[in-house]
Image 1: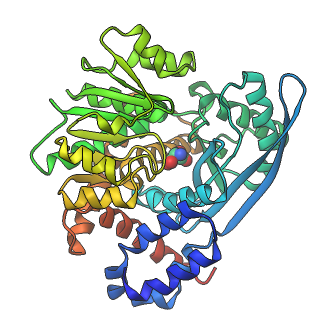
Image 2: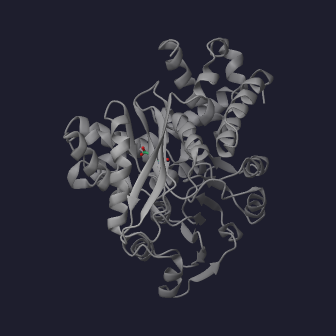
Image 3: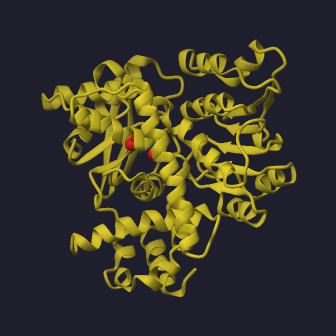
Length: 445
Ligand code: GLU
């Protein structure tokens, strides 16, 4: 790391003790930014990095709710409004027992750069709760969402902060959250949340966008080496919204996706994952992958272990942070890997990323490769602002243009800063310069 940034890093780490995922995200960005500060001494003078690492506002609140038996539970809610230089805070809500401030801040920090890369007018934020939706009934989920929004509503708004989904928050939860926001505020403010249902202000392609976008990004990387998805053997982690649509898109481009996973294990299906069956089990039945193997002839389920033991030429980590470590990366490389695109946020550890770079693997970091989700959220905001709704084809075309644009900007920025082919450097610098310029232009705030 550039020595001028080391002191800033040390202050950030000391000021935010115990938030190891946030530290990891900050260090990863700082490691790319040395050359930028040679060209832009004004960023150092304006303390842009010090300001960028301190969220503009952090909200932590109590979320009390009752289960179906009438028992009272208390969870913790978060919204970190990280940076509004480019637009209203924008980013998802994650409901998962692992959520604490360090997770929300790592996600919010990454979101600043990701959102800048999309070219859309959106700042960075993130939120969520340590609530565990697994095994909860619809009525329990609704009561939790209503309680969560009863505090959150006062902090958000179409021009202020626009939450959406993330792990544990999908269309159902956005519906309950939107209903409660409308009820409290007496405003049909479509642009306050994205990921809404199609009949009440949502955008076509938003459910598919993160997974589709990840594959489009990977396709653009493959093109730089004269290759495509056609004939690739793809390994995907996860089996939620991002994974399902990444699988569908990769297979539509001629790849065979041979494996995907959930928290209990993974399935191997040499014939290619049956996306409709997977979607039905995960989204309609809210079931487990063991069900997939039980119903699909030729598929096998492996309990525990790592999906990265399955060999493939393209890996798409679409589950969660730090799910792919240095050992898994080395194994994938020795098994013939050529490309990785991250559908999840920070799924590869720093060691894994080093292994990929040293082996000359094409590596698309999440803040670039998975930006299609939030970009399509910004398209949803555009449709809401103009009280319009676009066709699937038009919206998908916009998503494709945005993803190709992000790829090309990352590649060009990496070239410009002397790191050709390094999409980590390209994404970090590309996102940072845009935000830093806007912050300086807006004065010391
Ligand atoms: N949670 C998604 C992400 O990580 C989407 C956020 C949004 O649509 O606002 O980018």
